[in-house]
Image (tube, rainbow, N blue to C red):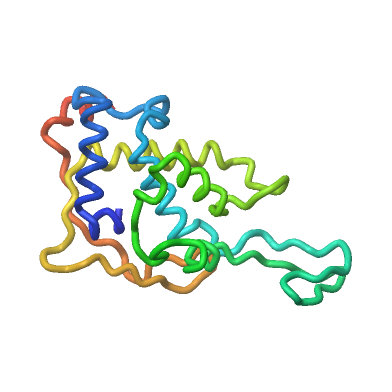
Length: 190
């Protein structure tokens, strides 16, 4: 939500997509998520900028090898810095900017997905990726579709990262969240 509050035009486009595809008489459901392309672009861009774990699980080299000109002896612990890969200016156009549109064009979308590693890659990729993507999409769709969000007047949401393995925000998110009048009926059935 922090990124969306700092980029209200993205929030507006996402809400318009939800209203157009789902309407205002019901809440988003899991089967709706694949039919919300812009929302999925937002989820991918959030995971690019702020992966749940900035480092993948440690691995160990099974044999001596050379990678990028560096000798890596057998038994060396290997860590993949996903945070750095996702912000590499040689790989991403304006890597520090929140631009969900980078995942929109079919050809570019597939290429961008190949550069994404929030769940790892290969045979040791997180087996919960599909579930996580559906749940993140559903949670975000519900928050956008059912509520109006306002940041504190005159302030950008501070995106400074705190310390720790999961890189939490240094300052908690402070917002005003109110139910959308058009969604009160749907929310009353929870």
